[in-house]
Image 1 (cartoon, rainbow over the protein chains, first blue to last red):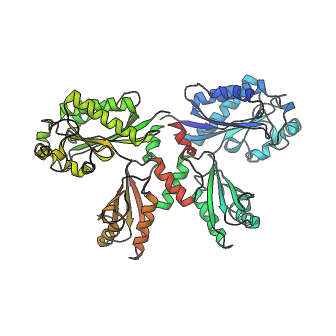
Image 2: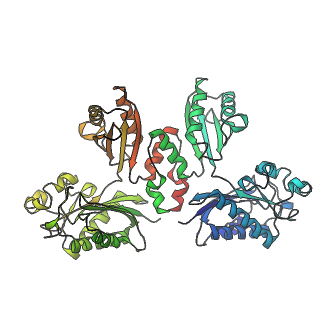
Image 3: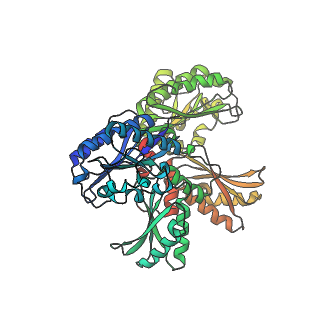
Amino acid sequence: MVKLLECVPNYSEGRDLGKVEKIVDCFRGKAGVKLLDYSSDKDHNRTVVTVIGEIEPLKAAVTESVGRALELIDMTKHEGQHPRMGAVDVIPFIPVKNASAEDADAAAKAVAAAAYEKYGQPFFLYEQSASAPHRANLADVRKGQFEGMVEKMKDPLWKPDFGETIHPTGGVTAIGARPPLVAFNVNLATDNIEIAKNIVKAVRYINGGFRYCKAMPVALEERGIVQVSMNLTDFTKTAIYRVFEAIRTEAKRYGVNVIGSEVVGLVPMQALVDCAEYYLQLENFSVEQVLESRLI
Amino acid sequence: MVKLLECVPNYSEGRDLGKVEKIVDCFRGKAGVKLLDYSSDKDHNRTVVTVIGEIEPLKAAVTESVGRALELIDMTKHEGQHPRMGAVDVIPFIPVKNASAEDADAAAKAVAAAAYEKYGQPFFLYEQSASAPHRANLADVRKGQFEGMVEKMKDPLWKPDFGETIHPTGGVTAIGARPPLVAFNVNLATDNIEIAKNIVKAVRYINGGFRYCKAMPVALEERGIVQVSMNLTDFTKTAIYRVFEAIRTEAKRYGVNVIGSEVVGLVPMQALVDCAEYYLQLENFSVEQVLESRLI
């Protein structure tokens, strides 16, 4: 069985679309590699690529894209709203089909080793690949950003896993394995942001909620409603339906109904199958019974 | 965009597995054709094949399999519990991806024309391809079975769409387009078959229920419970969750809970996505957001 990984590299270029195309070209026309999506944001000055592939060709394409980004992006001149520390800012590998977290971890480490050797780009291993617990969270790793990294790396706690200090124009890259992330929002029949804030506190991890739930309250001004906006960072352990039902239950104490919900971007089939299984009380169902799963 | 059709031909041979393999071989090693599943039943003396493919190669492979079945199966000697009228008994074509009912209908008619010309096998067009309303239902078409077909075809109402009378050893085949069918069963927390019978009458089409719901009550002796066993013949119009919730509501009047449900065999991704959309109240969701849909 062919193992498939997803990779969602973030590049610090979102304004010069000619440069973006040259980077994205690394994922085109390669056997065993499929470019699913890419989008550039001018305010963030950043491009996010979504690519899926068999492990070896995917590793090769991602490594090549690091070299291409280093040729095209100069971090000493980079400006943008999004926090960033490298020309390639972050490279997550996600298991998709027949692949394990270990496969994703091995791919991340192999790409870091190859790109460091070829191009001298340093890497922090993060998320499931982190070499110490304090280096797992991307926000912690990236703190200080490109401009603060030379100083930060003098602290032995923040020596890169590959390399000693930053690449002069490429900065440093976070790379690692992570579970698939589902961006899931729930809309409430109220314009009272305090209610959204209270519900957020009930469901998100940092306030005592679900282990793999990050959440924040958002006011949808145009619709005159509020939203619980979430990232579910491991839907296999913190299921979409479980968080949804918990929000519905919390909203009841305020006499507020759930109007609807939304999935932003891509979602693994298993995450939705889990929901259908729960609500239909399906017995002994396997994702292999989904016709389309036979066609991949 | 590549159009994909599913085809689920039924062959009247389920005992001589050597012959079965020779028929199934028609779907192996062909570019653009993928054999998903096949299973033979000795009591029924019948084999059901599930195959998916691009339209042209799929048509060619199915046509070839008709010829192969005619070489290997002699209906004058066929015995089995399942009603049947031909060596290839029935050939449904189902739209799967980027394909319409019209594409499935055209494929069915093309295969019938080609197999009649090459092998002299006559065909009835049925389901969405039927040439008259009384010929749409397979049970009506097949009534009289192989042994009664010569007589039946003398009635102008039952002249085949291709051919004049039966093939001497191959009988006649029903072929046509149909929507994907979902086999869905709901298990009830009771051993009272009367309750299952009453619920069946509430949900199935022939008694006033859902348009695309066929249902029957079944006793699951080993588990000591009863089941509403269904075929949903068009899940896009009679949704799984809608039938499930209707059964739950009907069961309440008897104080009976739904224990669970099951999907038998394959189910299109859209059918489960529809359920997740309903229960999660998803807004503006598209099946294109399912990561795996990008990989087909």
